[in-house]
Length: 134
Image 1: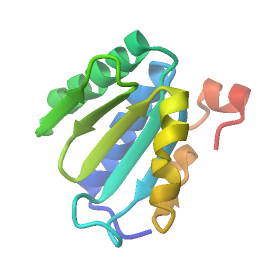
Image 2: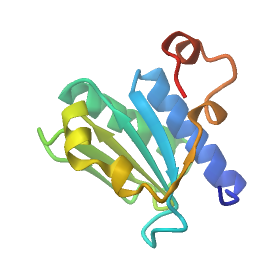
Image 3: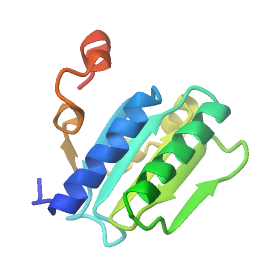
Image 4: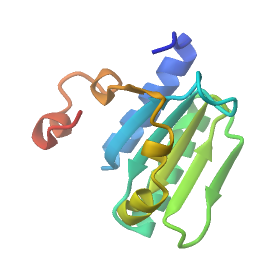
């Protein structure tokens, strides 16, 4: 894993915590800094419906704004099953499960290094223990 700046690490933690609190599923964080010139990190997660995706997108954007992180854009394309929030160094991709399977970002960026989600969530997170999250 490349060395994150304290700001990047804190933003990753804030985003992952917000997603976890809103019950996002299969959260993964990929360090793409060595294989992409677009951004340094992808956060990829699932929602269980279009309204859930909107709620996850809005929550992440809200948390970023509250913490003075400039959001370059949000892509919320109606019923596409894929929303994105671009915070420059970090891009958050939120999918319905079938769209995540279809687009396969996880495997498209297989050369990226995965950051274990348990290092980014608060210690003793009850959902982590119950659901056996990574």
